[in-house]
Image 1: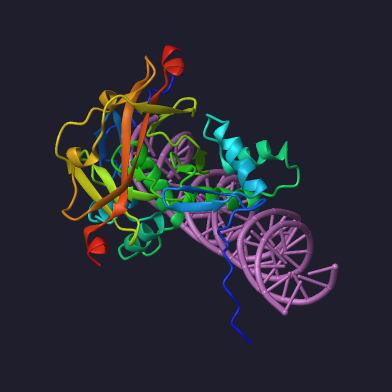
Image 2 (image 1 turned 120 degrees about the vertical axis):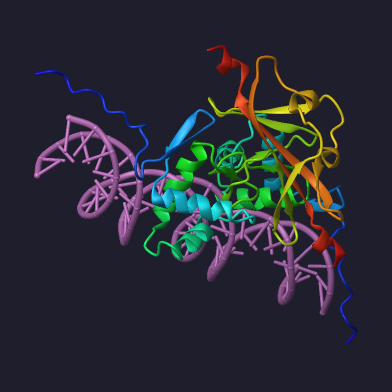
Length: 150
Length: 150
DNA sequence: TAATGCAGTTAGAATCATTCTAATTCTAAA
DNA sequence: TTTAGAATTAGAATGATTCTAACTGCATTA
């Protein structure tokens, strides 16, 4: 009996469409697509619960576990970013352009700030020789213009 | 009956010694002092549990609630810093010199990196007019030299 | 000195975010 | 059509943090 030929799980067809990003890839199931679309259509850095609420309008039976599962897959594929600004719930962000997060300490709002100039962290901080930088997360905390005006 | 004269709770005496830092102040009770000393003597950014373990060698009866309580007071007084690098436990840092955190994604180690040059976040990112910056948190993720050498 | 008030402390309960588990369903390949 | 593997689900479990209510001890006031 000949050995079974290996399947090719990466072949796109029907629902099994994949996006290759940064060397990784995800199978974009309907739920993952919805979670991604909700996040891509949000600029407020929603939490997993907020994403669940928004996806529910389209898929009323989706569970929180599935939302976390989708978010983990999308994050490890590099399609979205996980943002930790405070204790408590994590927030998610689908803005893949280079940016940093401004966090208003008064109202809690999170605003994306885009680069005005090239930023090379290696120029500003002394890291031990041999250190390899994969990514940087800059959080700027302060008071947003609306709160500062009050 | 004359109204009671207000006490002056800020008057230092005996245990009631305070440190004024950044406009805020804390009453340095023995536990707060021990928590601070443990953190000041650590360079590994311990979690609340790790701090509890270390403080216990001096104060065997201290509780986790007290450690959290002390850490919150020390943090809001600006004597220590709260560091969020990953989901899960928060980490604490008593290095008050300007610095950023390098986080090794392989071994989990956190290393303080000190500035090699002046860094002005306002120069590199477009923030809405009127935004007030209070502080910035930069986390650099990557592979430390020891892990990179393997 | 005794009474009082308040901040600090405590153990344990409660809460909240996240992860795990086991059963079920779906998809695509054989 | 069968099968294997991945996705999905509800609910349980876990883990981190916060809350609660009682207690302690210092410092002020009587």
